[in-house]
Length: 129
Image (cartoon, rainbow, N blue to C red):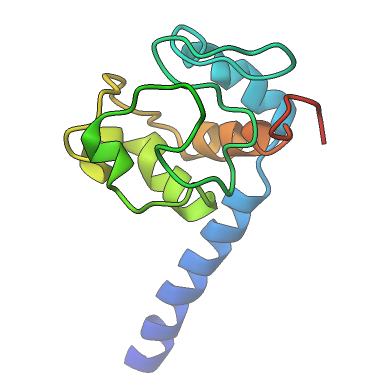
């Protein structure tokens, strides 16, 4: 029985990770509304309190041109891949201690997955993929 239990737990985590990867960009656009006070995305987006998020998926943290990042973000060494974004969007202050982002994080895993899918639907120039 112990062998079966230890195999099921990692398998369930793998399946949960797959579900995150299957976020819905349309639902993510709705969830992104809480982000819009500080961030812009899409054609003509400009830096606000937070940086433009065009092309953020796959980009090095602290590297959007023209934005004044905290020292913590610039030196974080992070790349905004799906796994890092999942952790960060859930609890920004825990992932990059000392960053400027005051947002506490998204609490629902489906909102996180959907926002990532939405962010991933934009190229660096703001056009849709």
